[in-house]
Amino acid sequence: MAVVKLEDVGKLYGGVRAVRDVNITVEDGEFMVLLGPSGCGKSTTLRMIAGLETISEGELTIDGRRMNEVPARDRDIAMVFQSYALYPHMSVRDNLGFGLKRRQKDRALVARRVAEVAEAIGLTPYLDRKPHALSGGQRQRVALGRAIVRDPKVFLFDEPLSNLDAALRVSTRAELVRLHRELGATMIYVTHDQVEAMTMGDRVCIMDHGEVAQIGTPMEVYLNPANTFVAAFLGNPPMNLMPATAAEGALRTGTGQAPIAGLSPGRRVTLGVRPEDLAVTDDPARALVSGRVTQVEALGAETLIHVATGDEKPVILRSGRAAQARLDETLHLAADPAALRLFDIETGRAISREM
Amino acid sequence: MARSDRARLSPAALRMTALLLLIALYTAYSAGPFVWVAMMSLRTTTEIAASPYGLPWPAHPEKFAAAWFDSNYDTYFANSVGIVLAAVAILTVVGAMAAHAFARYRFRFKGLIYFVIFSTIIFPPQVTVIGLFQTMVEFGLYNSRVGLVLVYVAIQLPITIYILEAFFARIPRDLFEAARIDGYGEWAIFWRISMPVALPAISTTVILNTILLWNEFLYAVVLITDDDKRTLPLGVLRFLGDQLEDVGMIATGLMIAIVPVVLIYVFFSERLIQGMTAGAVK
Ligand SMILES: Nc1ncnc2c1ncn2[C@@H]1O[C@H](COP(=O)(O)OP(=O)(O)O)[C@@H](O)[C@H]1O
Ligand SMILES: [Mg+2]
Image 1: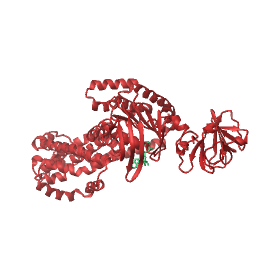
Image 2 (image 1 turned 90 degrees about the vertical axis):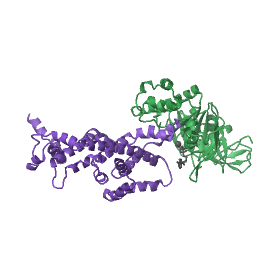
Image 3 (image 1 turned 60 degrees about the horizontal axis):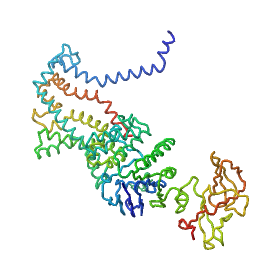
Image 4 (image 1 turned 180 degrees about the vertical axis):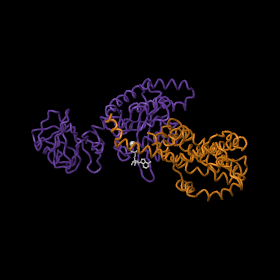
C-alpha cells in the first residue's frame, strides 16, 4: 500500500529550473496521470519519483518515508519505459525474472512467479524468445510484465503506449485500466495524450512549463479548468476562449452577450465556452457571438463549424452530423450561461462564478 | 540451343566473368606469398637454394617436428599463448570498464583524460620503445613475460577503449536505468548489461588484439632476451646466424606462427566484420 507525496519538489539542470513547486499527493491505489505538452517536465517529475534523477528541491515521501536519498532499487517501484528498455541479450523469461532474482534467491519461486505473470498477460508462448523476435505489442507486454512480476508498491509509466499503432493503443489502454483494477496498486502514468489521460486516470495532473497547472478528476479538469492553459490544452477542439467585457448585468463579447452579473462593470476577462456547449439560435438578441461561417468540418459523428467573430481565433461549434451550415452564412451562437467559464485576462486564472 | 548460347554471352555474364577474373587475380596476389612460404616450410634450405619456387616434392613434414621439439618452438608457442591470452583478457576487462565509464558517466577532467589516453596513438612504436625499455629495466620488468604482457596492454588499450566506447555510447540509457530500478548496482550493471549487450564489439576487440599481439615483434625483440621467454615471432631469430640464414626452417617456424592466426580469420572474420559495422541495440 503506497501513498506517494511530492512537496514543493523542483528540479534544476545547471541553473535551469525544469520543474518547480510540484505538490502532488497520489493516494493509495490511485491511478494518477501526469499530462502536459512535450517538455513540460512530466518525465523529469516521474524520474525523480523513480530515483533516476536527484531531487533538487522539496521532499518526496512514499508512505510517509522520505525518499530523496533512497536509491532507486530500494524504493520498491517499477517503471515501464517508453522504449520498453528490454534487455536485448536475455530471453523474455529472463527479462521478466531479472528484477525478482535480485530480491528473491529461491529460483523456483522466481520461475513460478514469472510463469504466473506470463500466463496472465499472454506471454507464455514467447518465454524463450529474445526481444528482437517479438512484435511491438509483445515487447510492450514484456515491459509491463517485468513491472508486474516484482509486485512493487508503485508503478511508474512513461508514455508506454506511444510506440504502438492506434488500434493496439486503444486495446492496451483498456487492459492497463483492467490491470490497475485487479492489482489495486498505486500507479503514476505520464502521457501527452489527453485521451489516455481522460480514459485512464482516476485523477489527472496537468503540467505546464515545469509547474502543476491543475489536479483533478478528468471531468473536473475538463469542465472547470483552473486556467486558460488547461482550457486550451484539453478537448479536441479545445475550449473557445475570447475576450469579453463586463457591463451592467451582462458580459459583452465583440458580437453578443451573456447574462452574467457580479463582475465590476468595465472589467475585461477571458470568456471560455466548450464547442459542444454552443448552439445555433435564430434570435440575434440571445447570441453570445455571431459571425460568418469560415469552415465546416463534417467528421461523420459530428460536425465542427468555424465561425469568424472578429476575434483572433474563430469560435468553433460542435454539432450533430445533421447540422446544415453553409460557408459565408451568418450564424448566431448561444450557450447556457452555466456552461460559460471566466478567466482573468492577465493571469489566465479561473474566476469563481460564485461571487 | 543457339539462343541459350547467345544468352550466356550477355553483358551481365561478361561483367560477372570479368569480376571473377579480377577476384581470382587479387586472391593470387594476396595469397601468393602465403602459399610460397607454405611450400618452403616443407622443403630444406638446400632445395630452396637450388630452386626457390619449386614444388614441395618430396615433402619434409618432419621439419615441423624438428622446429617444435629441437628448436624450442613448443616453448615459444606456450609463451605466445600465455602472453597473448593474459594481455587480451586484461585489455578486454580494463578496456570495457574504461569505455563504460567514458560512455556512461560524467566526471571531472573526462575530456583531458580521454585526450591523454588517445594522444599516445600518434607516436610510432619505434619512438616509445626506447622509453619503455628504460622503464621496464627500472621496474625490474625487463626480460620478463609479465613485463611484456603489461606493455601489450598499454599499447593496445587506447584503440580498445576507442572501439568499445563508440559502441557503449550507443547502448540506450533506458537499459541501464531499467536495471537500476530492477535492483542492480553499477558493478552488476557493467557485468550483466554492458558486457553482454556489447558482445559484438567486445569480440571484435578480442579478435583484433589477439591477432595483432600474436604477431607482435618489435616490443618483444627489444624487451625479451632469454630464449626460453621468447614468443613465436621471435622464433626466426633461432635460424638467423651471422653467416647463415636457414630459410627452410624460418619458413617452417613462420607456418607454426601463422596457422593459428589464419584459423582465427577463417572462423571469426564474419564476426569481426559484423562487430565493426553493427549498429547498437535496437
Ligand atoms: N538531462 C537534462 N539536462 C538538461 N535539461 C534537461 C534534462 N532532461 C530534461 N531537461 C529539460 O527539462 C525539461 C523537461 O523535460 P521532460 O521532463 O523530459 O519533459 P516531458 O517529459 O514533459 O516532455 C525540458 O525543457 C528538457 O529540455
Ligand atoms: Mg517525456
